[in-house]
Length: 135
Image (cartoon, rainbow, N blue to C red):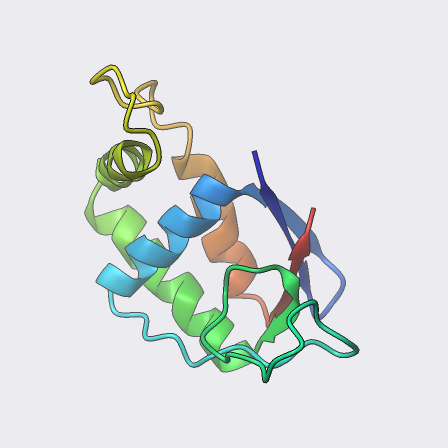
């Protein structure tokens, strides 16, 4: 399973699984976050094309600016506070999209294992801008 490493501008680091990162972006978007766009990584990227500022997924050392990080963290926290079951529902939808061989039970049906990492991400993002890289 792919993982994301996030390094905040103050040096603090956070590791997330790909499903947790994708769920966080979806929850934040549905609770008011509008992505401001990432800054291109310093140095060469593996693309060879102009930087897509809407890229939050390729973990190529792109940077999420302070204002965007704050908005992401606040919207994610709002979603987690307002809807206690949101993590389970989003995880189930993501599992269904990823695995067409699903047995009908969500992959993350245990007592919301995604909530804790998402709460950590909400707190992390509200404390500063960060770089997205591979873990």
